[in-house]
Image 1 (cartoon, rainbow, N blue to C red):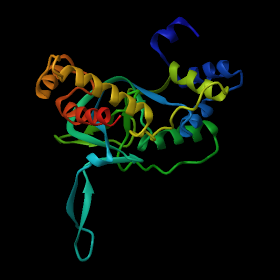
Image 2 (cartoon, helix red, strand yellow):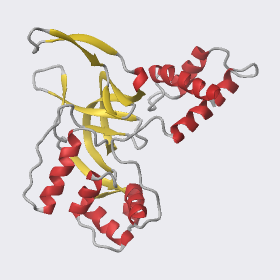
Image 3 (cartoon, one colour):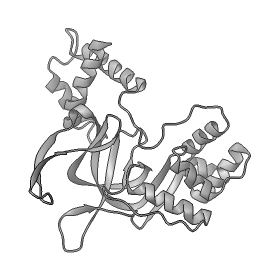
Image 4 (cartoon, rainbow, N blue to C red):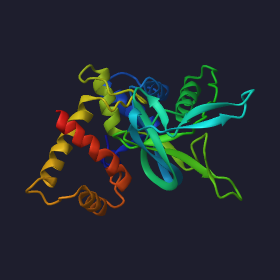
Length: 271
């Protein structure tokens, strides 16, 4: 691999096919790259060369989901139904999105929980030249996320002469689907039988041992910081300080800290 590829950390799909071919010593086509992504064996990413607007969403547990009762206008006679304030993505994992809009630029992982699945399937069939045209279903929109799959973004666009932003059903112009070097090497390890499979797209589960161990560790640190010899006697002071030093950092907003830190307390006390 060239020094340039290593420096930027990601490859175009043709470059990715060539690189993976070298890693597994077996011919890999662009169609294979998309198919591996469809099967959850390769995590593809998207690079925004400009800016794209989006609603940010945090991963939450099922117990944190709030429900409200609304009247179904299509039912005859009208009836009440319960609607969640979050989006279910499998198991006990949900995403709660903010109404506020943020701007994204740079590299993000395709979440593979919405319309981006259809985008990848369409590209696969185009390159496989099999004549299949997947049905476009993007009811909830298109989603990207961070590498850890703890922060998600629902891509949006503003209609002309309108102030409100709406979810989009296709990747915007000025966007390229790419593969990171790290993801390709992880996939090669799977195919070569030298590594355990990466988690499939859309199967993030907060009950995993790794997540629990992080919570226990953070809970222990909280106990030290807020103990008799600690610097912070009140949780509010600690949250304020974390929010201050973590300004503009993902996952360190007051609302997230207020929600996550008690979970870590509980995990540590129950360990």
